[in-house]
Structures are given as structure tokens and as C-alpha cells.
Length: 172
Image (cartoon, rainbow, N blue to C red; front, side, top):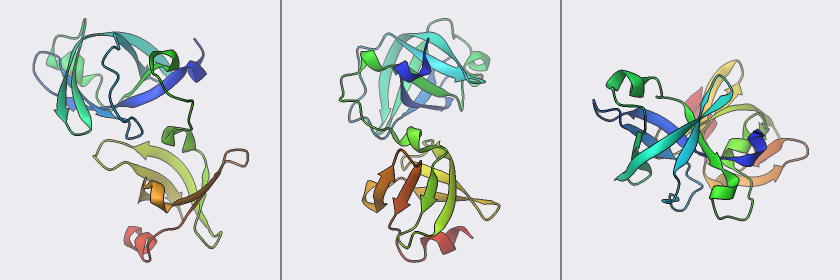
């Protein structure tokens, strides 16, 4: 199956119970979780493995408790933690938009066109998503705040930010 047919749903942030439930941190770009979903794909070593959903329950504002079929112990649930979850794009009703996850590997620039660094990850394990950026041989975090994004050039794989004064200094 072509990975371009998948949409990033979120990341499993932690196990929830001794019965195999996990907490799924939902992609901040989704307005609502598509409740009709019966299966997802969990990524392991760049392979997406299908998992069937037994049930879901609202957990907190941007997360969900998920119980997968065939995952019934704490140890089995632990194996899923920190793995990204995808669904088929055909399962979700949206005009195909650019996802924040698609910005991984883009080069980030500030409002003065100064190179900040390369985006190496989108961290969605907290309520506020963060871009993890390789900056001067260090890793810095920039909140994934749409108000701070000035331009995205998909062809050149570049993103331009207008950041609050001193934000980059906090990371150094």
C-alpha cells in the first residue's frame, strides 16, 4: 500500500490501563476525530501495520483512549507507545490539505530569511505541537503555531516563520 494514501492521525503517547488501552494524541490539524474509523495503521520501522479498533473513548481535549483488538496486556500496549498512527485518506472527509507532518525535512527560516535549521520531527506528545529543528548542532523546539508561519514553499521544501522576539534565545 502506498504511504501517500495515508493521513497522519496522531501519536500513541502512553499506555492507559493494564488491559491494553493506549492514549492517542490526536493530530492538532484535525478538528474532530473521525468516529467511524474501524482500523488504523501503526508505524514500526517505516512499515505501517494495520490494527483494528475495539473501542475509543474521549480522554482529554486532544487525545483519545484506544483499545485495539489483539492488544490485551500492558506489555503489548507498551510496544505501541511513541509510534505514529495513520488512517487511509479515503476514511476522512477533508479537502486534501498540507499536513504539519509533511513539513519534516523542510528548512526553516526566520522573518529575515536567516536559516534556522532543518525540521527533523513534529512532536505531538503534548497538547501544543512543536517542530523539532536541528539548529547549530543542537535541537530546538518551535511551537507549531499557524500565526507564526509566514510562508510554506512546498517546491523548495522551505518554511518561513515570524517568531516572537527572543524565542530562539530560549532554546540556546
